[in-house]
Image (cartoon, rainbow, N blue to C red; front, top):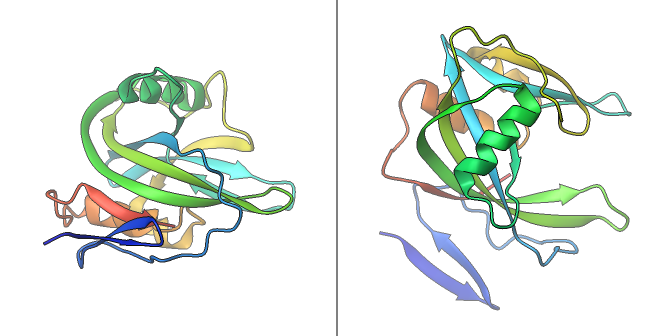
Length: 184
């Protein structure tokens, strides 16, 4: 059973099947909620990821995708983002999950952005060779097929994605749970 609570005008869901860290401290929360789409593309125990490098030498891996623009349907946003980042069209198979993500932003002073992430299971042509598209993400340096077995050792962004992707890989996730709550 899902129960919805409200404390100090903050709504959150309490469900034992999903991760829930509420209440959380949100430093300088941006009042604008942003929708984002992500493509989960798995082939032969490998997943397609974007690799980013930062000036300080840090690396992060992320699913292809990005922000939905005003007036843009989710599917259109995902098609556009994949063309921009991985240079190919995707086939959208299904909506896997929806999750809230409170993303720390590197601003002065530090701030937090509330994202609503829509994760879609997708496919690409069998002949697809990983490459950056015509408008890659900031700091994006590579697109790579990555062994699913190595996800735990990668700096995946957001970090909670690794456990979710492992459960999808082994078909051990509860397909009736679409909303995951807050991830991070």
